Amino acid sequence: MTRARESHAALAALAIALATSCAGCFGASALTLAPVAAAGAAQLLGSQVAMRQSQGSVSGAADEAERCDELLRNTPGVEEVRKTLDGMIESRQWKIVQHEGNPAWMLVRAHGSSEDAWQPQPGITTRNFKPPLYQVLQPKQSQFLAYAPADVTSPADSEQFSSMTAAFGAGIGTFEWRDRTYSFVVVKELPCFKPVE
Image 1 (cartoon, rainbow, N blue to C red):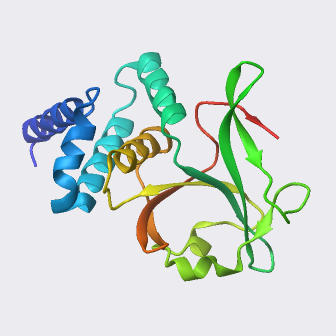
Image 2 (image 1 turned 135 degrees about the vertical axis):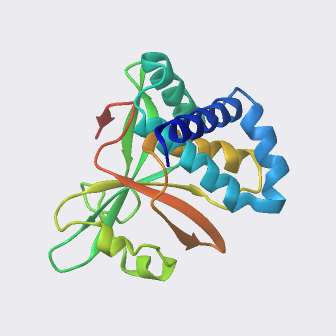
């Protein structure tokens, strides 16, 4: 591909990304596309986010603030995950709360979890992670798994998926839970807000 064609392709992709990211536009277009090609819409959005990240920040601090505001309004599921030396996957859930007047990530301590909120997840292999979560994780190194519905069936699904891809990046795979398919991404740090335990 020549440099001119690459430039034209990049400009066309950027124009599509800007058109679909306008306030309120994506929600309406995703609802129209959802019954026909929900997975395709999810992949399109993911590729737009990946393109934006590979080209660097388009609008700097304003873009970051917008992504963080969207994350605050439509937080995807977020769990910290790790693989123990004996091969067990453990997790603990995080959510966004108000802490001393500012949004912050906070641990959710489930009933029966350890003092530091870690819980073994022996049934996680039944969720059909693609690629397998076990292969994505490194022993003793916790990472954050963010997830949102990949099969967009409502405005809330669309907004949550958009929030996840904007704040955490494009999904690296899918898994199944309660008869639905979710897109997931694994990152080393929580975006936008400081964590408090």
